[in-house]
Structures are given as C-alpha cells and as structure tokens.
Length: 109
Image (cartoon, rainbow, N blue to C red; front, side, top):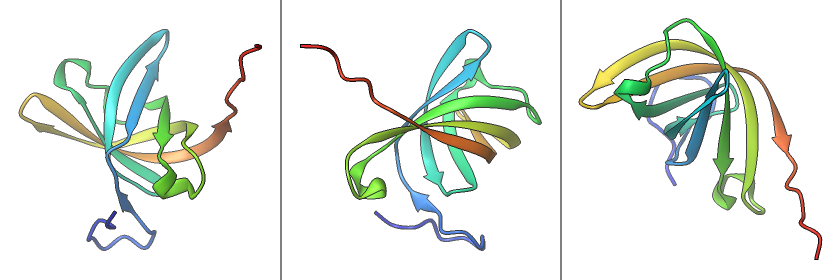
C-alpha cells in the first residue's frame, strides 16, 4: 500500500475501501481513493453526487493494512470541500470533522 504523492502535511494512504455516504435516510455506496486522519477522497456514481460545501455523515470500512489488527468500521462527520466529475463518477474531497469507531455486535449463539 503506497501513500499518495502530494504536498499535504498529513500522511495520506492510497486505499480502495468501501464507504457509505449517509444523507438523511438515504445510504449511497461509494469507495475511497485515499484517506488520512483528517480527510478523504472518494468516488460515487454521478447520479448520487452530494452538494458541494455540505456536511454529511459517512461510514468507511478500514482493512487490516490500515488498522494493523482486524477490519473495522469508522463513522465520520465530514464537510465536502471539492467535487470533480470524471466520466460516470463524482470525486469528492472531504474534511473529516470528527469520527467514532463502530463496535461490531456479536450475535447470540
């Protein structure tokens, strides 16, 4: 796994991880291009594009390569800062305002 080559001061990981954007009652599937502790760039279908400059919630699944343990899910509150159209996809750059680790519930046997 390589870090994205850019001028940002934070370590940014190039990673293709599942992400779900939550807008009201709607859940929109997406996937990450890169991720840091303060921001994310992700792709979603152009038809599901979220308005620029809006706050939104999202859940991202992090693989063991990032967590150094098992897969985990992180729920984030983000703010869209940039949107780019690329073919049938919208690329969204967002600042992560805060986040929490979601605990997996174990089913009773």
